[in-house]
Length: 113
Image 1 (cartoon, rainbow, N blue to C red):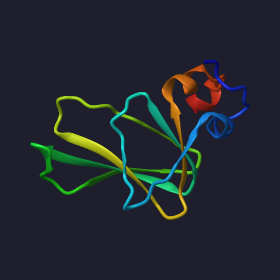
Image 2 (image 1 turned 90 degrees about the horizontal axis):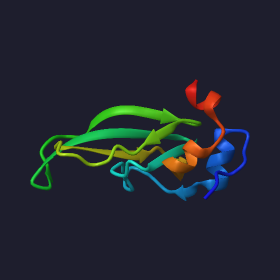
Image 3 (image 1 turned 30 degrees about the horizontal axis):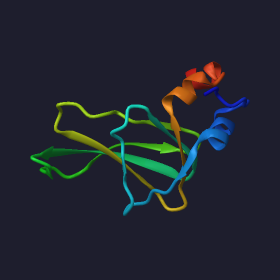
Image 4 (image 1 turned 60 degrees about the vertical axis):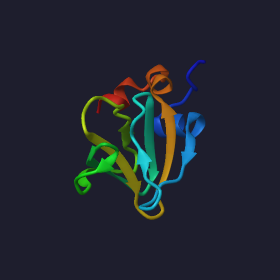
């Protein structure tokens, strides 16, 4: 699959990304290292929670807020007990892209800034 021809990250996300709904009651699990979320509008808060035996043993700790035009990357699963999740603020619109699509796009200058 070839990357879409686009002039900006927003255009790549719109043409190749799948719309994703997220809210405080619709968290996104950031467990896919091949997934990238582009924040079209609003903001996305990322949290870390410690789990043991499949149950949370800590409150969610706020890690960062990604605003409009930012990317949030999946972190994958490992042997750690920490789980990353994200929740959109009201009126947040996201696009999910594959990491491969993003890497194939010709956006080196924009992605490095």
